[in-house]
Every structure is written in structure tokens, then in C-alpha cells.
Amino acid sequence: MSSKQQLLSPDPPLRVACVGGGQLGRMMALEAPRLGIAMTFLDPGGIQCPCAQIVPHDRIVKGGLKDADQLRAIAQNCDVLTVEIEHVGVEILQELETSGVNVQPSARVLTIIRDKYLQKQHFASHGVPLPPFQVTSSVQEIQQAATTLGLPLMLKTRKGGYDGRGNAVLESNTEQAIQEAIQKLMPTSDQQQPQPQENLDIYAEGWIDYQCEVAVMVVRSSNGQDTVSYPAVNAIQQDSICRLVLVPVRNVSMDVRQECERVAKQAIDSLGQGASGMFGVELFVTQQGQVLLNEIAPRPHNTGHYTQDACAISQFENHLRGICGMPLGTTKLITEAAAMVNVLGAKSGTMADTLKSSNRAMSLPGAVVHWYGKAGCRAGRKMGHINVVGDSQEQVDAVLEELLALEGVPVS
Ligand code: ATP
Ligand code: MG
Ligand code: MG
Image (cartoon, rainbow, N blue to C red; front, top):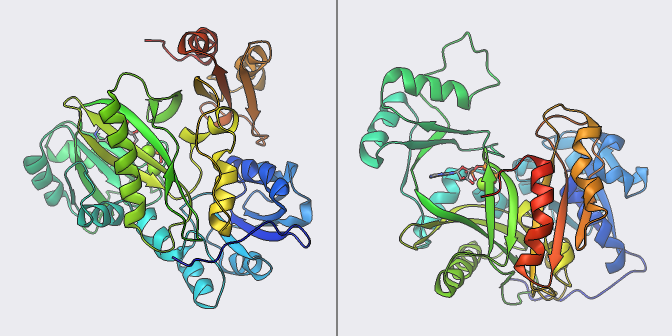
């Protein structure tokens, strides 16, 4: 890693351009001015995007995240180019990097991460513990994988998936079941047309009967400083969308907690030079207490939002510090216990119903509302989140109970 240390340089401000202007970019933009950083965003929504409520409109560029011209445009006047999402025009970022643009994390790192199969291959070759997996580019290979890895089998698209879109569970090894799974994985194509049988961009993962899912936020600075992590947390999903995060992780031993943090740091360090800023590391803890890596994200992550209120330095500030080569901030908790609940668009799709949990949170002790300012509310869309901090787990749980009921999350 380069050992160049960047210190505050507010006049003129350090210029950071970000590909994507959604909620993650917005929460970076809220931290940036304190560090003397001025941000620019590229987003297909233009001034309708969540970042446009935070930065002047002449710093919002309207365009697709893979649009070569617009990527070149935002790269032109920046000191560092970063991303808030991995599904971007990485080939263009590679070209920009070659021509001298400071892309953080690097195009090479993004290339590995945005393709889940390449990610798995990379980590396997570096000894990071993983679920068993194999590439399945034809129906026949899926059948073979089901025989080798067993049923149920998790099929995943290599690129572009999020919130479980891009995953399909195969329960039986019949040709019909496989065809149905492939249809589910390719929802944008014409459902009337049979899907191709060959060259599918899919791979298969053995089913993990996990005890719980854990996430660890890891941060590295491009200045070469040692990698550090925030504490391990429970990441509780509903329909493959993160619903609830509990901090620090519960119901696992101290050994398992430490193993989660060790595996997460091992994974990010294995990416080598160019792995800078925040990384969200998603893990499975098996019934036997083994820790396996699910996937990583090269950016601030939903499971790290709690850091805004439970830590002195949030994941958004540490992302900016890391990509700019500044010294990293503390990753310690400043509260005994914390939680994060995602605010999803209500089933009715109305704003009034969606706002119920946030409005209630305004009167609950230790609850902090973070609204994203998205244009338009849809059932299931991530509209905001609520962090809860407290002096004990019991205190946090009492507040959570009400919020989860309003969000329609079953409390176990
Ligand atoms: P994200 O929104 O976190 O990017 P994603 O769409 O990339 O999610 P994954 O993280 O691959 O999807 O999987 C979504 C969820 O599906 C996981 O959090 C986990 O609950 C479940 N899952 C994924 N892989 C497996 C597996 N091999 N065995 C059992 N469950 C799995
Ligand atoms: Mg993912
Ligand atoms: Mg995931």
C-alpha cells in the first residue's frame, strides 16, 4: 500500500467524487464537510437522488452508473473517486485509474468483488473459510452441483444481485425445478422465451443451516495503516433483506465473536493494495460454531449504520478517511448496546404508513431517525433506518419491541 498520509486540507477542500447518489452516498455527504471534503455524485436520478438534498446541485451529475462519458466527467475534477455501490462501470474506472485517476477502492478490487463467483474464488485461494461452491453455467452443471453439494442448493447470479434479488433456492433436482430457478434469476428477460441452457452467469453454493448471520465492518486506509474492524453484530434478515442489527453480537461465544472479526479482517487484507475505505463483511455462524464468509461489499454497508450513533466515528466518516489516506478514526462503541431497524416502504405503499415507525421513534428514548429523502415510496423499499442506543440490552430491547411491531417484523 502507498504510505502517503493525508491530513485535513479544507482550503481548497479535498474533492471526492462518488459513483451513486443513494442513501449511502448521502450519509457520506453529511460527514464530508467536517473533514474539509467536498463531494460530487453521479446518479441516474440527477437532482431527484437522496444526495441532492445535501450537496449543491452543481455537484450532482445525472447519468447511469456505467455511463462512460459521465464517469469520465466526474473523474475529471476530483482528488479521489469512490463508489457507494459495486454494480458500476468498473472497466471505465480501470481505464481512468490507468490514466492517473485515484480510484479507491481500486478497479482491481472492485472487479473481484462485483462478481460473486470471482470473489469466492479469490477468498478460497487465500484460505478464507467459505461455504462450498461451484460455477454452473448450464442446466447439466446445476444438476451436477446439486448432486455434489446436496439439496437445497443456493443458486446465485454472479453479478448485479442485492437484497436477495439474484438468488434462488433449488429444492429439487428436476429439470423443471431448475428451469423455474433460472427464470427467477433472470427476471428482466421475456418470461415467454425459454432461457438459454448454456453460458448462464450463475454459480451454486451449498446450503448453510446457519445458527445466525453476523456482519463485521472493516476499514483500511490507503495510507498503509493497519486494518481495523468495528465489533461483530447480528444481521437479521427477513426475505433476504436486512431488517434488524443487534450490537454487539448476541448469542455467540467470545471465541466465535473474535473469530468473526479475524475472518473479516483476513478477507479484506487478502485483497491487498487498493483495498481502502469501508468493507461490509457478511458471515454465517454454523450450528457447530464455524465462521464462514458469505459475501463482502466494498463500501459502507447497511449493517454498519448503527455506527452513526453508537460510535464516535461512523462508518461513513471512516470510509472517507480510508479512501483519502487519512488516519482512521476509532471503531469502538461509545454505548453499552445498540440496534438498527430498517424502515421499509409499508405494504400499502403509502408514505403515511411508512412513516409510522419513524414518527413513534421521535418520542422513544435512545432512538435516532435517519430518513433518506428518496423520491417516491414503494412497498419494501429502503426509506430510512432507526438507530437505538441504550445503557443495556434490556433498555434497547424495550424500544425495539415497539419499533419492530410498527415495521411488521416478528419479534422472536
Ligand atoms: P445483499 O443485499 O446483502 O447484497 P445479496 O442479494 O447479495 O444480499 P446474499 O447475501 O448472497 O444476497 O444472500 C442473501 C441472504 O440469503 C443471506 O443474507 C442469507 O440469509 C441467505 N443465504 C445466502 N447464501 C446462503 C447459503 N449458501 N445458505 C443459506 N442461506 C443463504
Ligand atoms: Mg450482496
Ligand atoms: Mg448479502
